[in-house]
Image (cartoon, rainbow, N blue to C red):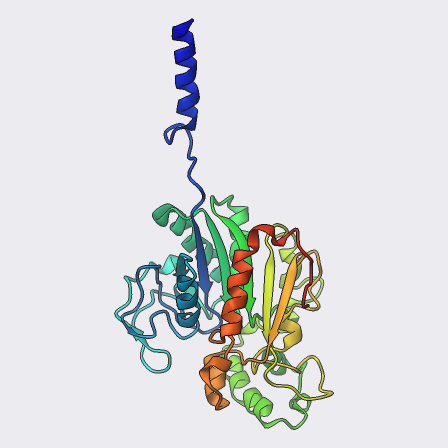
Length: 341
């Protein structure tokens, strides 16, 4: 009898041991995702660029803030075009960075949303294999929010071992950008209501979109691609059912009485789109929102002759909102829906 009890105890202990099953708590990380036409280096919690901006123009402040709060933070590599990320010069320069990851795990920030999502999903799976990451909180700036949504769909379809705890989007064109809509002709310069900065964006930033509008992310930035019964959003139904989403939008630029298809906006994305106000509950079932009087990016702040911390990814209020979204992810689905939206 003593031998049988000892054997039974050994079997039970084996079931609780590392060799009989992994009982460690899940390893978590925050993954920062860049937007349209952005170049960002791969960084890890203990490795960043030694020259220039440590994690690029959109991620440096967010990364430093989240690291300071004790989070493990990785930036997904992104490139204008296909290939690996290397040193950059000019605006937002960085150099002497961690070894670049393969092109297959690097987002082409000018390619299609779904292709970028596939590469991001591959990067997240790599974090599981190489860094033992089991759960991720995704934070996407601009189109990075759409890339992240595509990645979540890919991870679920492939039954990935990684769980997405939360998604936070910052200035993301859930419904498109008024500048892309100007290129398509659904928004006109008259909708600027005489605002000179709005008109300059249509004649500058929108012209740049038009130059590459024939394919890739620029073509997919318009409302016609994203919305409607056969739009991209429609095919994302169910993807976010178990993922709490926080949407952060900027309303730095406004024109009283102006059409909501343009006003207010952050210089690139209208607030209505950034908050996903016309997105069906089947696509976005659990959401909370935050509005700040910021521009889309530090580049927009620069050309508008505003301080850098008026940009969404550099404003301490936004950094705190991102932190709160991640900290509250475990219970967010049980909380109030559409708070602030």
